[in-house]
Structure formats: C-alpha cells, structure tokens
Length: 94
Image (cartoon, rainbow, N blue to C red):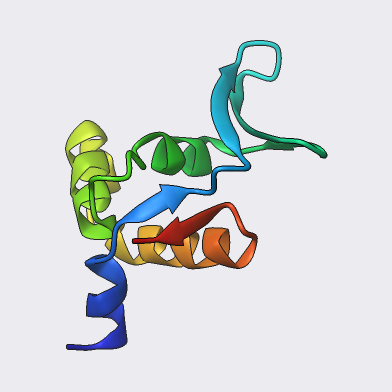
C-alpha cells in the first residue's frame, strides 16, 4: 500500500480546540478557536464540513465528487488538504 493509499483510508477528525461554523457575515465557513478565527475558502470549508469523524478521506472525496459533479478526481487535493490541516493542528487522524 502506498503512502497516498494509506492517507486516503484514514478518518480525519476536527481538533477539539476548533469549531467549524458558517458565518453569514463572512459568507464562508470559519474555524473558531480560543485565540481567534480562521476564515476558510470555499473548498476548505466544504471539505471540513464533510469531516464527520466517520468518513475516511477517500469517502469524503467521493461525497464531494457526488455533491459537485464537476469536481471529478479531487481525491489528491483532499488528501493534500488534510495533510496541511493536520500540520496546522486543525485535524488529526483516527
């Protein structure tokens, strides 16, 4: 199994110190944490919104491809996003 395959099969979970919510004033999803807020771009917001602690990275990719048919083949981008989100401390894997 390649490293990419391993990354695709893990289940991401939002760090308990962060809360994802839609902010109408910002017209975007934001991550709230004790020290502040991170405004997410549309793609990042959709990816984290699909992160429910049950779906694997590949299942999240498939969910988003079904929700947005023009987004075919995004699994590599979703894997890269979760890698960056883990580096920033937003998520971890179970």
